[in-house]
Length: 249
Image (cartoon, rainbow, N blue to C red):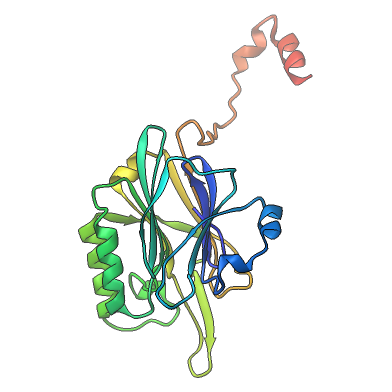
């Protein structure tokens, strides 16, 4: 569903889609030859009054069909798309740094409660002290509100592998700080439509965020790792050696 610094990557309705947070420039500033060289096409950017967009969506196919923009704001882009005879709703998030404006974001996402919903991006809040490098006692109001939003919206936090934290920085007075701010959330109806969903926190590059690699697989696409088994009785078959020789060659 996207890739960037920070960002995320995954198949979205059969396509490879790139999400870029905090580009800090307009897409018109990028040469189309540069995007073509990366085999990328621009889909949309979020709307921000008197500010540059902070979310881009790009894709790696010739076109995205049966897809439409539902909501765009300074914190989110919500896309409706149809594939595999199903309607999907993908929300791409770059939440505000303070919790009061984030309440508008929680409301926008909660309005899609009945959809097959996946929400990915930078939420700028953690789920608890275990998601911060510097622990603190008690649970702050932003954490409490975030957890309440997940519960009320029936959203599940997809477990990630790779690096523990997705954001880090060095503060002049506090030193090194890190937290898990980026994640993928899905509801049960979205989860039921896929055989597996995998989130991997990749290596940090030029950003202070780690990109996420998100992969959705159908049952047919999920690799099956079967252990090798050998039955001694096979050697008693008269065609055993010839069968092995032919298969090996």
